[in-house]
Every structure is written in C-alpha cells, then in structure tokens.
Length: 159
Image (spheres, rainbow, N blue to C red):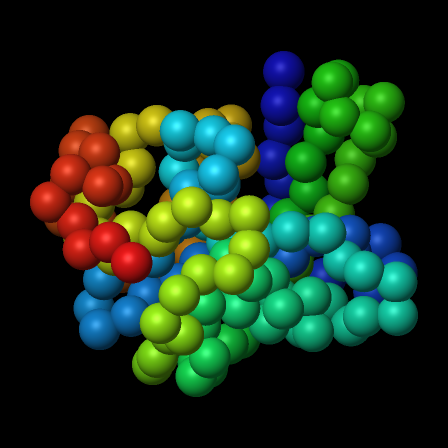
C-alpha cells in the first residue's frame, strides 16, 4: 500500500523529487508521457548539484514547455510504497506554478499536455497525485476543479 505524508519542511538533502501543480489562463496543466496513456502532474527527480527549486523549474520546462512562469513551494511530501525504493520513505517538494507562456513545441519525453478545468480520470500515479492536489486545495493554493470524473483530454485544449 502506498502512503503519502505531508510536512512543512525536511532537511534539503532529503528532497529527491519536485512535483509542480500548474495553471495557465485559469486552466490546469497536465501532461502525458510518450510511453504511457495516463496523465500526470509535471515533476521529476532532482539532479546532482541542483537546488530543489532548480529541479522544479527544469521539470516544468521539460514537461510542459513553460518558459515564463511564477513558481512557489507549497509543502514537502513523502511517499512510502513497498514496490519503490525498497519501501523507503522518499521525500519531494510540492510546488505551484502560474504559467504565462509556453514554447511552441515540446522537446522531451512528453507527448502532449492538456489545459483543462477537470481532473484526469486516468492517472499515472493515482495513489499520489490526488493527495497532493487535495493538499494544495486545502491550503488555498489551488482552486477547486469543476468536475472530477471527466477525462482531462476530453474537451480540453491540447498543446
């Protein structure tokens, strides 16, 4: 069973991941990896020598093509799952970004992004991402979605 915990802070060296909840022009931003049919929130692993903020900025650019944006930390999260990292609790920083503009084309492993008012139905990480979204909403960082059972790509603008 996957367990997600939320923290205000942890030691910086423990932060291995950045996840970036994003909006543009009042719509939420989700992405779909080329190798999957599922939707996810932009994010990824911290590279050696990066600050966690630099990780978030790099991942947001790589996975959405965002070039002008404001980004801020929301909270620290951890994930413990028997099938990941030998069941070790791993930590990441949750961010929120308001994207002003994107590059015209994606240049990464991401096949497409969806700009939508609704939550995806088909998550890549269904035991993690909804918890992070709920926490951002609880903190007032992310506004509520208009519906939760519709597919993100259905009726959404795509890039």
